[in-house]
Image (cartoon, rainbow, N blue to C red; front, side):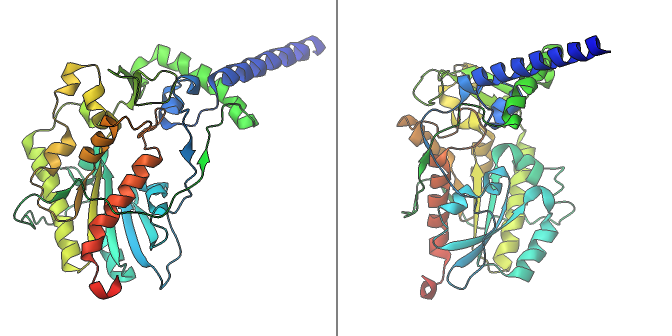
Length: 350
C-alpha cells in the first residue's frame, strides 16, 4: 500500500509539474479564441497595452443622466462601450438570449428608458432576426421601410472625454486556477486530435503583419461560426432579417423612443481584405447585404470605419486572441452611438 501511495504521489507531482511548465510556456489563457481553441497565448496574446475599461453593464439610474436600455450580446454584456459614455448615460442591459420581442417591448413600456440601443454581432443576426428566430417568435411583421432611402451611419463620430489607464496582459500564471490551464491545454489538444471537427477556432494567413501585436502577427485567429466562413444566405433570408429589424424599429417609433441599431462585424469580416484567401476576400459579407437599403434610421454600420482604422494600421482593433474588440473598437462604438443619439434628443434636454 505504501508503494502504491508513493507511486500516486510521484505521478501527481509529475502531472502538476508538467501542467505548470506547460502553462508557464503557453502563458495564462485570457482570450475567447485561445481558450476554446487551446492555443498558446504566447502565440496569439496581445502585446500592446490595452485600456483597463470597467464594466458598466448596469448602472444606477439618476436624474442627472439619460437612461439607456441596451438589448445586446457579448459585445454589450461586458459593458465596455457603455463605459466610454458613463459621463452622460446610465444603462440597463437585457441580453438578447434571455428575452423576446414582446418581453422587451413590455419592459420598455414599463421602465420608460430615455433611449434604446439594439446591438448584434453579425454572426447572431440570423438567430435574432431570421426565419427561426426565438426572439421574434410569432410576432406579426411590419416590413415597410421607415425612411425612403438607406440611412446607415458609417462616418459620424462624436467626441468623447472619457479614457482609461493602460494595462498589460498577464504572462505568468499566479494562481492554482491558472496553473490548471496547463492540464486543460493538454486535454484539449488530445481531444481535437481525435475529433478535429470539434475545433471551434480557425487560423488564416494574413497579407500583412501590421494589424496585430501578437507573436504570430501574420495569422488571424477567428471563430468557426463567423458568417463569412459559412455557406451564403440567400436573398430571402436577408429580406427576412431586414423585415424583422424594421418590425422592431416600427415598435420603438410607436413608443416614441429614440433608438440606435448597431451591427458589429464578425472578426473575419472586419479583416477580410487582409486574409490570404481570394475565395474569402471576394465573398460579399452578410453585414453589407443586410444593411444595404435597410431603410431604418439611426442604424450604424461599423464596418467602413473599422476598415478605415485597419487601413491606417490600427493595431489590435480586434484582439488577436479573442472574438471581441480591443479598446479602439469599444471607443468607436461609443462615439457612433452618441452621434446617432444626439439628433434624437429634444433640444431642451441637451
